[in-house]
Amino acid sequence: MRFYIGIFANMLYNGYNIELIQKRGVQMAKIIAIANQKGGVGKTTTAVNLSACIAEMGNKVLLIDIDPQGNSTSGIGLEGAKEGRGIYDVLINGLTIEEVLVKAKTVENLDVVPSSIALAGAEIELVSFMAREHVLKGALSQIEALYDYVFIDCPPSLGLLTVNALTAANNILVPIQCEYFALEGLSQLINTVKIIKQRLNPSLEVEGVVMTMFDARTNLSLQVVDEVKKFFKERVYTTVIPRNVRLGEAPSFGLPITKYDPKCIGAEAYRDLAIEFVGDFGGSYE
Image 1 (cartoon, rainbow, N blue to C red):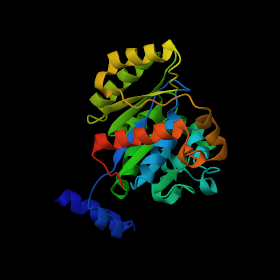
Image 2 (cartoon, rainbow, N blue to C red):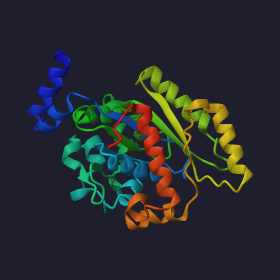
Image 3 (cartoon, helix red, strand yellow):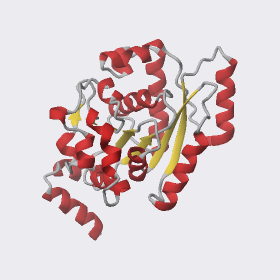
């Protein structure tokens, strides 16, 4: 009981939305890191569109772009960190997440912590920090009662930024493309998750694997899905994300796929994935 009273008192002291907290109760967000050190597997596409779909279902969602490339930031329609401030300032300069977050322009219930070019040097700067792996976790502890879901779009590496995300997260969601090299480096990611569970975050679990860029016309896609299912078994989502031109076009317009072309197969797939994902967590389907 003292723990929850302490959380409430801390939020009151720091000026958080107490009316919202009272309405929700002291209910912590489910924090999910979307990670795979292999590039081009659909991490950012999944981060943007899954966040948007779950927010459209009536859930309060926070999307954190911790990738220096900033593709989630631009893909959701933001030009960059407001006034030059973003996740870099949370990690390095001690700003709170509430000081840097931006409300998504086109999706209700979705807030974004943007990336900025300054994030490219953050890993070097973090090396000298005390408890450097826990910086993001500490920042999230101040606001996690305000959200139902927090998604962290990780860079395609296993450096300190990704380690911060995995240390802060409850679960990891792994996108894997339906291509020949899909499993390349996957064992390294799983080994990293095991190390973080042992040393930094005992509660971290692989929430699931989502297959992306699926082409039902090719035997290769079907074979890759079969191989991944052998490795991850029931953790592979039933919903697969198809290879879809509209999914590739949407980021250039700064829109999630459900706003860019709500009737295309890519939009339908991400809605289905959102329903399956939220169902696993026992969430809201409003």
